[in-house]
Length: 177
Image 1 (tube, rainbow, N blue to C red):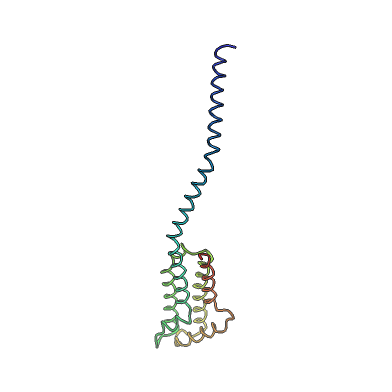
Image 2: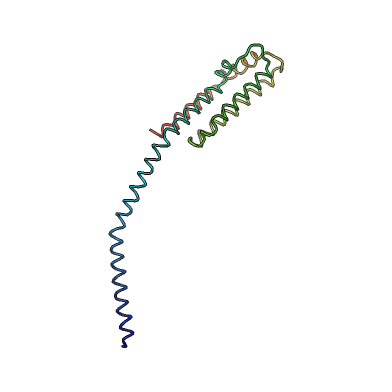
């Protein structure tokens, strides 16, 4: 064999020896690197949780408040103005619901999809209830008539949708504890 062949064989020996050393070194260091990365991920999740948990709890609190405020049992008492007609109170109630909703729209960032769907459903169902009830009455009738029909309808329901919505939010919030 010529010297060039010996030279390449010597280089090949060094390359194989070097690759073996690197592989063995990597095998020893890899678990330590993985442990360090895992530890940093846990620390990051902990810091994120410390930051977002108060925001998420506040979002659920605001959704419960929204449900309570748009519940016709509460809203009709809160916004009652003597001498108003069905048409006037209908427009005012729907405006109140939409304003409350717009005020809380950013809370969807912090609550589950299911919780946000419930909030939307309550908003839409409440508006539908008001509109459907108002359409069955004369636009010039007293707002008291609208209130009576809505409250009678709600008392006739087997399950109160507003209480069910709040219970779902409470159940959803339990995941944090």
